[in-house]
Image (cartoon, rainbow, N blue to C red; front, top):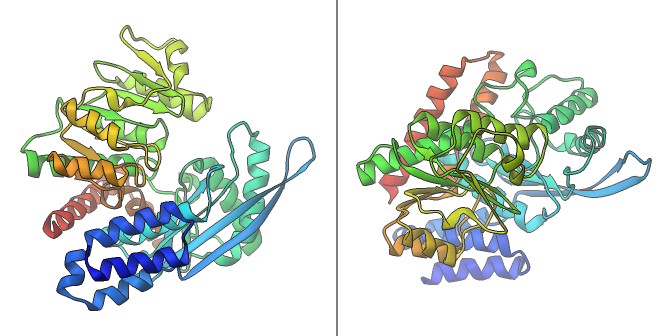
Length: 418
């Protein structure tokens, strides 16, 4: 390790010794830039500034539950870097949310957004609120209270949040409505909106689609193969996993698995469009567990559910971790390699820990890190911002074409740098 990298790591640890997720993300970036620092030392000082957010907002979110009892959660917005444009990054509602996780996500967002070539800075936000098990009215009241404070910190040219884990069209709609009520302004202050009030075609699909487009370019360039016929393991069962599966189907690949925190389901011949529709119904409409697939009445003779396990034990050609951070550790990576996996493309943020990444490199696995492979979501958010500024709505075909071109360029930049 060079003196410059060691110095920057020490600075980060001295400031935030308890923020393990942020320090992990910082370490990965710093180690990857070691050659850059050696070639041009002026970037050491630039990187020191990048390690510190421009602004961190933390606030109380009181809301009324259905029993008439006031509940209190904590809200955050980390405005990390606006050097090339307004802060841009999602909002996450999950009980594990804390400042360390949001700083790691906001830090990654700086580089992800710059790779898209669009004028967007990096940020992230959210709350430790858990929408699971809450009624629509409870979620609405929470979102309205959350936005009541957040509204003073954001704007179409200042900070433009989007969705993330547990923040989808419903939550974005509640927050956008509250923002309009408070400001009397209809502007593109949030992305991921419904099509009826300024949203973009392809936005819900963009992260999953973009990850597959990136994988397609990488596998074609580095393995001289198409996606057709490849056996793919996908983790998670939310938005990213669902649309990763859909795009894999469109390209002729076989998407074998979905998972959640309780286990995974496998279709050995790959999910069909009808089976994927059933997964979407279970997760998006019923908000149920993936185990319910087995009793959903779906037409399937080979499906199996494995409780308490992860899908990385399923033999595959390519893996798409699309659930959460650090879901692939050293032992999981070793199983993937042993079972013939030669490509890992991260749909989630930092799903592979540093030991797993070392296993990929040691065994020649093509690795698409989250900063690049899952840039499709924020790229499409940038396209939504462009449509909002011009009061236009682009066709589904135009947005998909723009997304595909952006992901091609993202891969090209990564390949050239590597």
